[in-house]
Image 1 (cartoon, protein in one colour):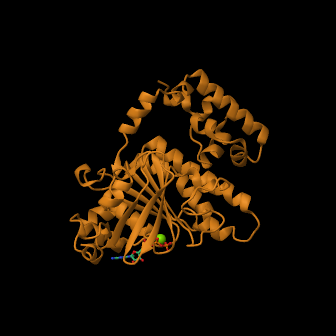
Image 2: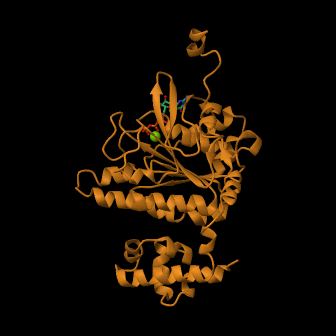
Image 3: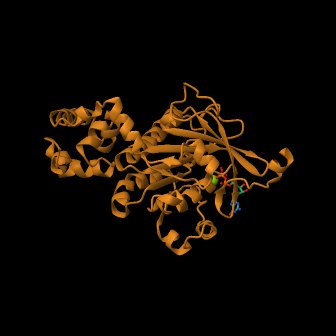
Length: 332
Ligand code: GTP
Ligand code: MG
């Protein structure tokens, strides 16, 4: 085992208090963080000094290697199997949707819900923020949630309604959701840099970013800076992946796509090789409207069978269609 001190940034030659502070501001807290970053990213945080950034990253990697930490990256398939069995899940509120997800949204992974306006993305996020607080028997992890709201669509009244309809105390449920409103993409990134600290402080198990892309899309619109937008969004998504893996929390992000999807995300149901940005998510679900219900499809998952799930939105948030719905009656 390595000690925390061994992983401290200032245990590296060349990292004084000033550099340490700057790295902290960029969300780099340990040698592991530093070793995992790219030169450009580290250089950005230390006044653009590429040579120094590259030197620091190399030192961090050498140190990890010396400490034997990297050896842990080589694991047997059996270990991987056991690791996957230790994954916990949070119910979405709909059994159908849970089945599609293999039992619910996973800890240690980033799950992306994307679809057009009104397809149910924000409702899924609201419901999950309630469900994660339920006991394990009821599909939760008895833990709180952090809700990053970038579009101003978080509604506490809706949380209270969902909690009440599910027979839990709305006051308690509201107490256990931290809401962070992000005013622009830079602010959104700053918030996510704080996520680790919030997780350690409150032991929360769900991080929601609704929506992950809205600010980037608005700010970089028609500025001919697609590459920069992709780079920023990519970096943002990687921070989330790291948080999911390091802290073993569920991370859920949403993306609005037009029914005729834009060039950025490609065809919603097919992977498009050129568009790497959105593919940082571990799992992607495409949502679409079907009169009063909603249909979800798992896209490109190595772990899930192909298929679709039908769910509805009602006072319980996300729910299964009722047995006597007109849809079923007409079929029998
Ligand atoms: P955008 O954020 O615009 O891209 O849409 P979205 O995918 O986040 O849609 P959202 O989850 O906000 O809404 C999906 C649908 O849920 C709406 O079209 C409504 O039919 C329904 N809905 C939204 N709010 C409520 C509510 O408070 N109660 C009930 N019963 N249904 C709601
Ligand atoms: Mg929404």
